[in-house]
Image (cartoon, rainbow, N blue to C red; front, side, top):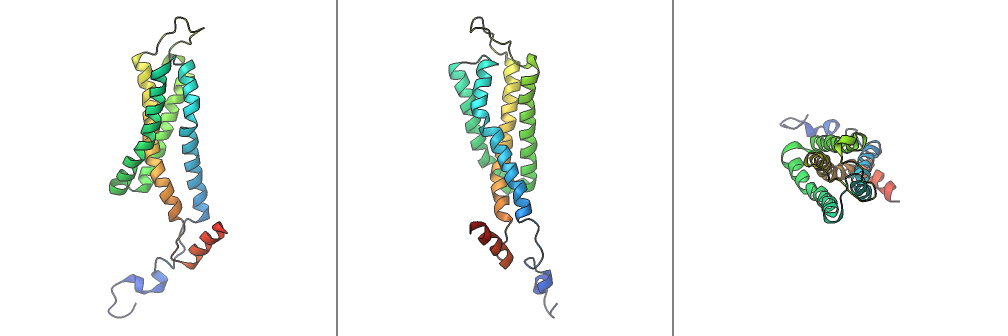
Length: 183
């Protein structure tokens, strides 16, 4: 280092831009896969969940529409809270980890409601004498949907930022990677 210098960044070999930065196209594959699986898990559930709640939970009309709309809206709204918590307290890595775990737990709970018959009301035969879901059965369903909404709030705001971080546009190599993508 030069005399009188107090920074290791004066040495070009120690500069952050001269080091081989991790990420790039290798990391983008994982980021895109995580985002894709989160979207598939939550957005494709809307249509399927409507059929499931109608046929297996014996829900009709306003209750059915309210459950789906509240869950869908909460999933979208949770991104704001997830972004704030990520930026102020946890950071993106931990927020993405906790969001992924929450989504996984929510999907596991919903899967259990399909596998274990006691977690949902008896199947309605011919729309006569249909038994409504009990409070504890609805609680399990709502717990699964809530965990999925929390997971979406943790994954959505962090994944996009990770994708943008993979390419260091301050270096020639980083700019060429982005240019090759758009050409």
